[in-house]
Length: 118
Length: 110
Image 1 (cartoon, each protein chain N blue to C red):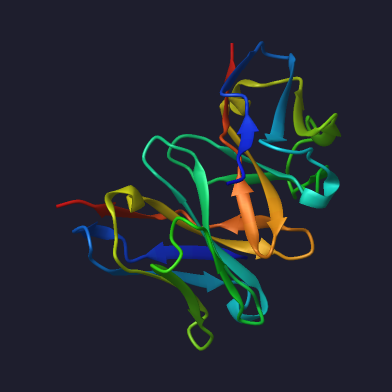
Image 2: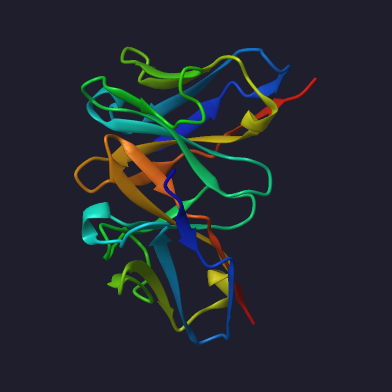
């Protein structure tokens, strides 16, 4: 059974850094495309970042230069390193498996909440 | 800046039919954008409904269907049920790893 479990969220001051984790089971992270999607309180979903099985990464303009997606193959875990955090980064962050060639998100975690506030 | 537009809200009667659309701020949506659709109820993670325009994800009832309607992608709920009251989001694939979520449609069944 495919499962995704996010962790690492919390309250952080503006300008601070945080690393989110997404532990996967039931499949291998390194041979799949993986993505982060966020949802600000009361708002819609926003695509944040993706890592291809080959290692290429892409980010939304809103986080470019501040967020980095990566993975640890030995731990079968996806990460999102978030630096220079802003109030507008406050959101529930979901990790999702992305099915290449069909171009959609097929499995989702339950999310981890990041609150950026002083 | 690409904007993917959806109707803010729709109301449908139980047993009725509703069609949600997903458009581009500039240009037409085609199958080349691999439209997909997701359902989200409050406090829950999104659930995948439709991918590649019109393929239902595993376990999704056949009252949900996807299509291209004119210059938009469309999600039709036929025979709406109370359980279908949710927010619905489309996603379009823009190439180069980039996906863009639509603005979302809140569907009320009453």
